[in-house]
Length: 199
Image (cartoon, rainbow, N blue to C red; front, side, top):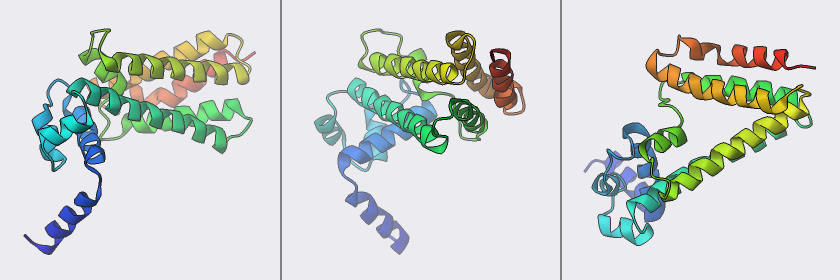
């Protein structure tokens, strides 16, 4: 084993097994899909074994729910960051959010929204990840409604829903026709919608 490989192994060993498993699952689930990735592959990528995985997560379903909970928490933090960047200015927060969403959607490693991808793969309403997905999407919609209302939109709920659907469509479009298609106009289309709803 060369020095670099030894250093990498040593660094990996410092990360607690639960964190390594979750990081490996996050990467594999997003790149390959939840159904396509087994616990053996996750354990191997995490540098551990199935017994350790099941010691930290009761089942693959529980691991999937935890993976999505982490992503939902990251999304919440990004909303808080928007508020800090543009305090007291919902209109500027909307514009900043649209631009950042466009950049995210068009990035080379983007495979769509992990929560939506999971919802497609996990249609069973009783799956523990379903409530995570639904709560996160409902919270995103509520944030958009609040921003649209704060920005003085004449029909804040309708505008928020239009922007919400615009983003979801842009994510799909970027996957199907590429980054130079309709998704590349996400921010401009969003701004046009906001303008159309300005009092």
